[in-house]
Image 1 (cartoon, rainbow, N blue to C red):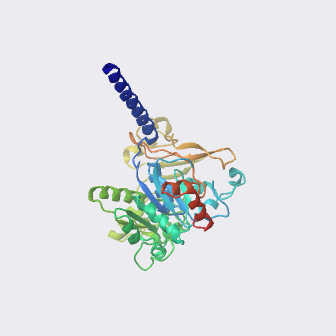
Image 2: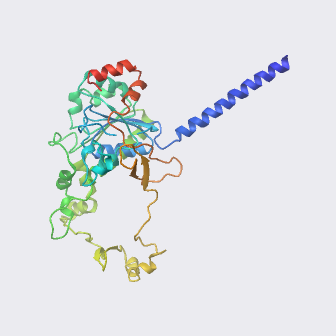
Image 3: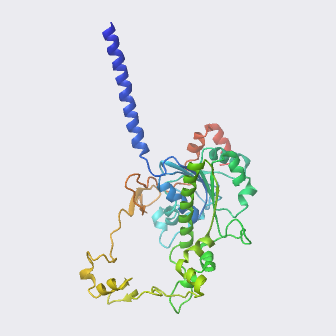
Length: 402
């Protein structure tokens, strides 16, 4: 009897051990740690700077939920699967779903509310809708904030306080919360209440003054460079604040602006003005202190050449025949995993090609896990996760809270 009893216990323990190992393997395969796995971010942003910032965090593993006004920025809903970490995105509306280029309509099978622009900066996010002017919606936001690490918004400074969801209020809910804001001109100063736009900040900050042909007019870069660089600065600041919180336990407020980002990006041009009074000028693709550094017309195309020292200049005489192995930067170049394809039921092809993640990690690899979400696609899932029942969620819909 003792022997059979021992055998039974051993068998039971072995069965539990195998079950535990199987569960660990399953959980590990689902968890697949990324740099920001486990970080949760509430994101109240729209258009480009904010969504670009939160998409970087999402690519790095933060759990992303994009929350918008129930009506959205367009006349009908947009069209993600799961993500591994939490960025929760609250916006009034995101108009970029309707920003389509010529010929793009055929890509979307006649559906409205989606665009390549929107898809560029909203992958790896879940989506819920909240009417933040409604008290019940604000209570849902506070409930989500209790378990969040970061809140990001791009409201005009002061607007979140008017809504009752500003930094002081959210900090009462969660003292360790990092509150990151991006605006046109920052939260203080005489222009704080102005709306901010990429091209305006680029003009006022001096970028347009130094961009374009020598004899031409000021020129905007081909992409929203001011917005995107602000998003890059902001994502780095958020990561720095997270590291500081790990050491101190304290959250803090981060305040970024398009205008100040653009001033920072003037770099050596601004330094020359500040220190020797040299006013910048437009150089086209030329460089003010390096030759050759320009684009040159050839028989069938345009050659862009930049030699930054005498050694490189000497090698240019040998052209393409000697470029291989010379250590001199030249094109064409093959990018590393910079195009990825996702299934997407709203496109005519059933798929969408996404730009890849430019920074490569040796261990905790970022990933593109889900397509850009439909408006409110994950509302029920997110609300169920904070304890609301199906009936309660339906009532919120009827009351136009979600």
